[in-house]
Image (cartoon, protein in one colour):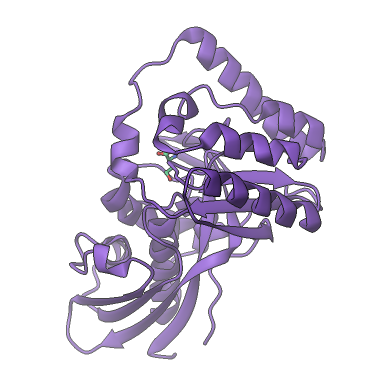
Length: 310
Ligand code: HSE
């Protein structure tokens, strides 16, 4: 068994408009790269490099990867120590699951170095413990796709019930990251504790429509269902030019478009890689109109767990 491992943690798009806290999918790019090494004394030593990494704490109790590893070791009663080097490819505060990517790679990597005492499905709860450090809430719609890949439905949190949704052929994602940050904790605090019954009914209908659309590869139904009555009305005002960016994606023939997670990234789904790229450049252009540079990432849905590079 090796004493060190290099592993990728993928970005993800959470909420996907109608699935607040309960739907997310993984994307191929960008990703974090973790190097995890056993050390011969207890404790987790973390070092960071890459995109906005100076803003991330290296205290393992406050770091999403560190906290996830501590949770895993704690449940095993293990005192094994690790050195973790995190190279951020995913800017924190961008809305595409930066903290989850590191936490997912950390738990999968450490599990591998320990000889896989946990099945992949059992790792999620430890990843969630890590994610909670950054978001201030116990939600799994970034961490679950980061751990498993694919499009994931969290049907229930208590007890945890995680379901894989089908990934239609020719479904492409565009995620556009404007050059600004939104803190997930703050973006969660912005949301009302209760929603009107009429909004809950609309959201439930759209969520059911979205899952059926995935099952039947019915992209029109997916598009009709991609409406968010819970978070978007409150969070869209945090993203300059949001309505214009959204409209530019729809005009470029996106299936649907919305805020990725808590933003500021905006995502769109489409039915070809060419459209995904075109939509990305139109959204970048719309962000430029409000003086924001942005970067578009286009890919099919990423269906694999964190990739071990050696
Ligand atoms: N579902 C979470 C939220 C995702 O919207 O707060 C955070 O990326």
